[in-house]
Length: 162
Image (cartoon, rainbow, N blue to C red; front, side, top):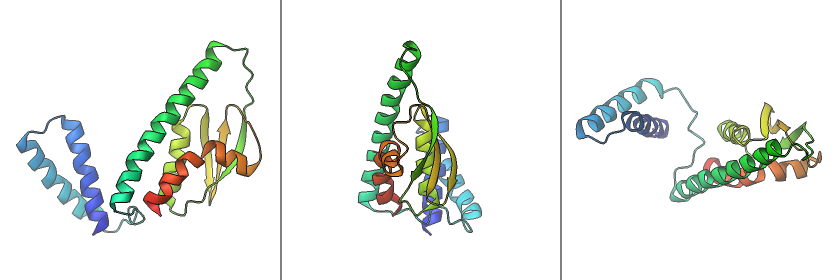
């Protein structure tokens, strides 16, 4: 039932965003299609089963989006500074990041968040370890790289996905 609800809300949100209108007829058609498609396709999918639905998880979702935007903006300025001033040394390399997240979806979102942040690119995910290409490796110590790259995202994803 939770998969059905989350999938319906997700489809309906995409419908409203793509139509760019909140006309009554568009909302009714979108709601109907969202429910029908959810009934057809979410039955055997457990992708949303690890999401916690609670007021706290909704709050942490919005906080996570805010933190992600802040991290992306900071990283954009850092990469832009390196492009404008090529004398700033870079130290590129691939490092390991260990995550505490248990849910595969949470790990996927963490990996995508790291990739969305300029200067980092998630190369591979194996169990609780992510391989990340980092434009300026500050440390190769596993705990420090996890703190630099993933810690700001993980604390919110832990609450959302448990």
